[in-house]
Length: 143
Image (cartoon, rainbow, N blue to C red; front, side, top):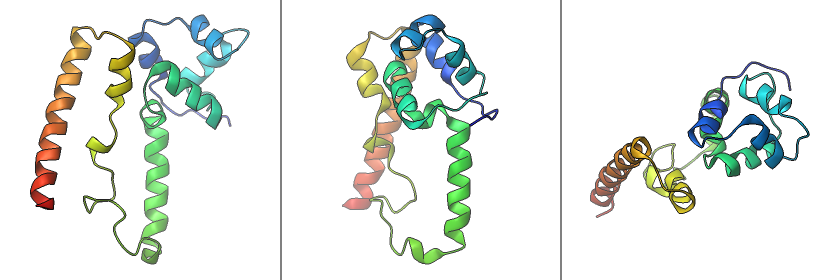
């Protein structure tokens, strides 16, 4: 699919200090041209390739392709609004249309695979504080 969707692939690759040719090698590509096209938003990878990028960059596909995810979310919300019977009851424990942040932690795998630098530690600390606040509020609702 040819398009021009913004993504976070370049940021994710540089965060890990990887070169295009290294990512191409991990994806079994002969040269880095397709990886570069992914980063520029000229080509959207298929599902299997997107999962491989998730594994390489240790970042969920939803975060790697944030704009595409938002576009899909908007489309589904619009269609759901046109047929409210599709979700007759809340399927999420917190009563919203989103999973609680504590139900998925992208930093878990990241911390298992690498020692973070100071900037990453700052982001992780903010995330932990957010999780703590989120879980504390959730406990009040449940109790």
